[in-house]
Structure formats: structure tokens, C-alpha cells
Length: 234
Image 1 (cartoon, one colour):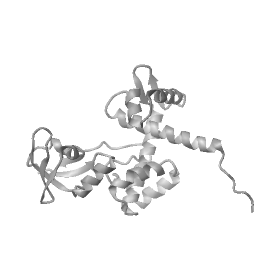
Image 2 (cartoon, helix red, strand yellow; image 1 turned 135 degrees about the vertical axis):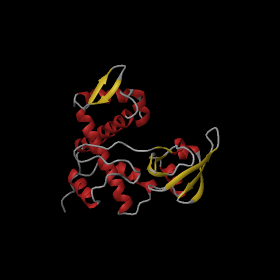
Image 3 (tube, one colour; image 1 turned 180 degrees about the vertical axis):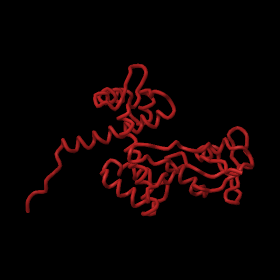
Image 4 (cartoon, helix red, strand yellow; image 1 turned 90 degrees about the vertical axis):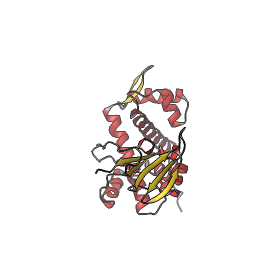
């Protein structure tokens, strides 16, 4: 029997390099939602690496025309970089939705699974997945799914901690990828589309007393900050 062909080290290196680039672009995109330019220290904290590694990656990515890097002023995605980042985010969010809807994964397990899969699947696979799921607009957390053309809708909602008392609202998004926090919200039966009203709040970041789909509940301040809601009209 012929010996199985082993993947070359250069092939493994290219795969690892591509994954690093995609994770870097996703991180810049996420942090850019809060500031015009992203500091290397903020990127390092987000990625869990040391600042010199971020600086080195940024310099290399300037050559690919995906990153604009200015010393002392941080980085920003170019148009090409943003399109690439949104393609990765699209893969991630469609995979998350497929895992929940078709394979029965609990919500709090899909982020880590999608992180592993998003770098391995082809665009043909993602196109087929999009069709299979009926061209969805949001993922299971309520985050908008970028289109194949690289367009993305604005995220909606305000944090539950900011909702005025006795105003009926709808749960629009669970704004966290932390598996423990998501599991906590799932265990508290806080899900997308729920009708929710804040009856009272304890001072000094204390818990909120809620009515969710007609049932009284209590939710801690930190968890409530992750629940994005939209006030119902009328």
C-alpha cells in the first residue's frame, strides 16, 4: 500500500497564516465600531497576544493593502480589508445559525465551534448554506449577517439597562460571545423575540426586575447589559 501523502510544512504554514490574517481583520473590524482607529494595545488585548506581535502583523498587512497603519495612531481597515473581514464574519454567523437551527447546538456552544469552522469552509459551501437557511438576515444572537456583496445592516437595539421603566420592548440581540454569559441568559429563558418590560432597577448596578412574556424574572445588571432591546411601537 502506498504511503499516505503528508501535508507539507509550507501548506500548514499557509493555512495558519491565513487564519491569523482573518482573525486579525475581524478584530480590527470589531474594535473599529467603537473608535476611528484601533490602537495596537487594544488589538493585542482583544487577540490575546503581545503588542509587538500586533505591530509586526500590521506592518506585513500594509503590504497586502488591507490595513492602513500609522505609527502612534494605530490601524484601520482599508476598503479591501473591510470586505475581507465581512466575508469572514458572514461565514461565522451563517455557520452559527446552521449549528443552532439544523444541528440542535445550544446557543452558548456555537461561537467556539464556528470559530474553528469559519477558516476551513469554501465560499461555495457558504453560498449553499445561505440558500439552505433561506437567506437569513440575522444570526442566532440577533447580529446582522453580511451579504455576499459585503454589505451589513446596522446592529439594532439599546441595552436593557437603558430601557425606561414600564416600556414594553422586544429582545433584539444578545450582545456577547461569552459562552458562560450566554448559558446564563438561556437558563434565565431570555431569548430573541421575547417581550420584555423593566419594572424596577436596584441602585448601584443592582439587579433588574422584569416581566418576560408575562412572567416575572430577576436579572443581574451585567447580564442585562448584554441584552439589546427595541421598544415596541404603540
